[in-house]
Image (cartoon, rainbow, N blue to C red; front, side, top):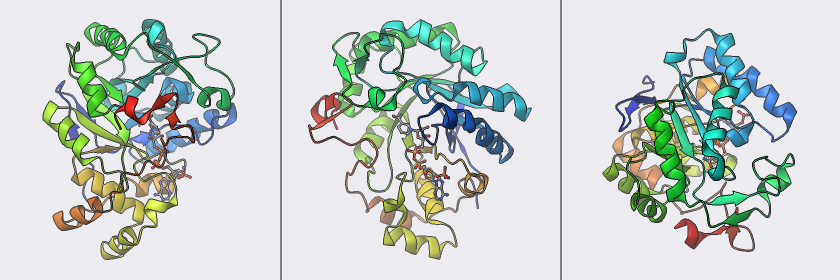
Length: 311
Ligand SMILES: NC(=O)c1ccc[n+]([C@@H]2O[C@H](COP(=O)([O-])OP(=O)(O)OC[C@H]3O[C@@H](n4cnc5c(N)ncnc54)[C@H](OP(=O)(O)O)[C@@H]3O)[C@@H](O)[C@H]2O)c1
């Protein structure tokens, strides 16, 4: 098992290639509060990179776990994200995230989605998950270019040490580049063996953008249970999840598996090194299949069509 590497960002800073996904197990206040327990086990298991977001509701619990862990702030890489209904309120939202995190800077601040959403309560997030994610209403302004300029200002202030995007395609990145003064450090997208996104990965690499894979194991069982993955797990005396995470590392991709279980947290950091041939075999499983961020029967995902996303 090789040590987890770090990858250099275009800012010169390093991001640990495995981070802990910090979405709550369920979008309920109880589950959000429970995350403090498993964030602390992750610190103990050696995690030094945590991927949260305003919308996850776990920022205060990450703050509490960080303080309880005794790990010095400068040894931890913290990512959080601007939610899609805050492009009108970037400075306020960022300040609120910092306050909840108990930090005076974040290592990476991401524009969570390219589209802007408007909820009936404006700045406030609906309390029910169904209102948060279903029938979301998108608006044309602020545009992703307007919002990126606000993130650039946060970077210049030093409080967002790196800035990046999430759920961006080549199309939306090209749109961003029409006005961007700063190249995103990271593009965080759904990526796993059934959605290898090789073209996007190569495009990002060419621009100096590090790709982070979200839902890196495919979240549920179907990717883990693929016969090729099962076969490789036997070959390397590893688990199926370890094979998938090792594949991300071999491609130079950061992966942020979420686990609320200390044994699985440890498992996800003890990864084999795949041969180049086996990396190609896993990439060959690609079906361009979105498992987590998928379109509804109306052809939309959170208010946008595949054409709007450029997916
Ligand atoms: N930017 C975005 O729009 C976006 C969207 C989705 C996700 N994300 C980020 O990506 C992170 C991870 O995504 P995800 O939770 O969708 O997918 P994931 O990390 O691929 O899968 C998480 C699921 O796999 C289970 N699991 C973890 N390790 C395992 C192992 N070794 N063996 C068996 N099962 C295992 C977890 O259960 P247990 O907890 O019980 O171990 C959990 O149910 C999120 O937390 C978030 O930070 C970002």
